Length: 116
Image 1 (cartoon, rainbow, N blue to C red):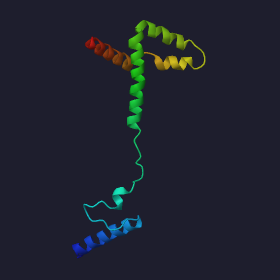
Image 2: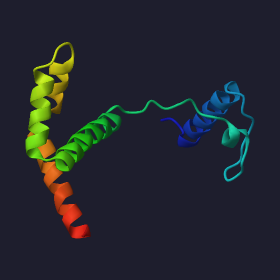
Image 3: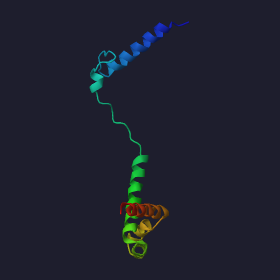
Image 4: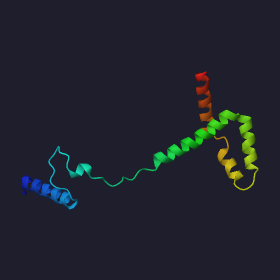
């Protein structure tokens, strides 16, 4: 049967060797040694939050335009875009009033009425 103290000893030795290979000296618990000032490599950030924020901004801008110009004027402008040339039909497809835009526009209109 292996001695638990020896296993703990070898774990500590392995930890010290790993730290020495990174350039650290011995650091007692609770002290600010070189590892406190050492910069860790940049962490990889997720893509979900930035994507969600970009979609929120896009739908928010669409809803703001829809609420500002009105439903009829907005529909006429989108129809003109869809009848255009080049990339205009793509813009018309992207700017058409979808359920998310309509919901956000209604929420904005309700918020504006409460401010008055």
